[in-house]
Figure 1 (cartoon, one colour):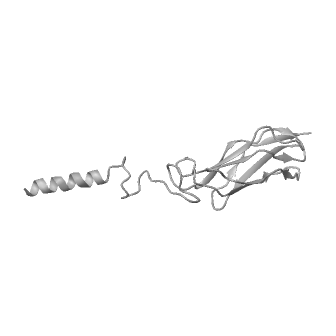
Figure 2 (cartoon, helix red, strand yellow):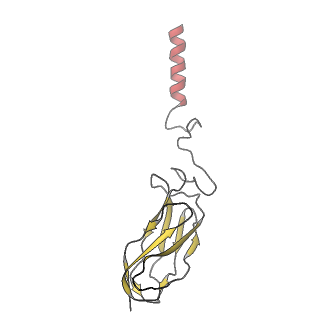
Figure 3 (cartoon, one colour):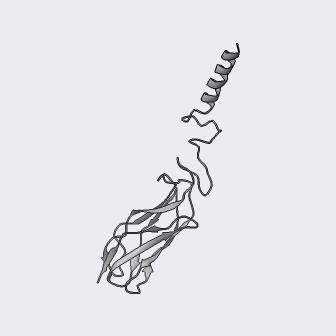
Length: 146
């Protein structure tokens, strides 16, 4: 009888810790809410450029949008993230001005910048995306033509 009771207890403990079931013990597979924690992996920890700045002509709006998303530690988008994301220059070889809407609220963890301009032609421009305490994202280099 004692062995049967121990066996039943072990089976119950194993079932309670089943990693594919969110039973609240370790919040496995759980999701948060509010300004972070949405999505499958948890709260956002860093930003990532998912659509890079494009080469374009000085003062013209960039073709296509620049897109930055807030991701958690496993690379999943934090769909609960709704904070302001801001773009600035990391490398600005000619003292140019970044124009357009350079600060936008993330929607479902994604910030879309659709009307960016740069007023001076040069090569080697790089953008930084920042938002609160998240790790900053760095864009690929791009060129602005005359």
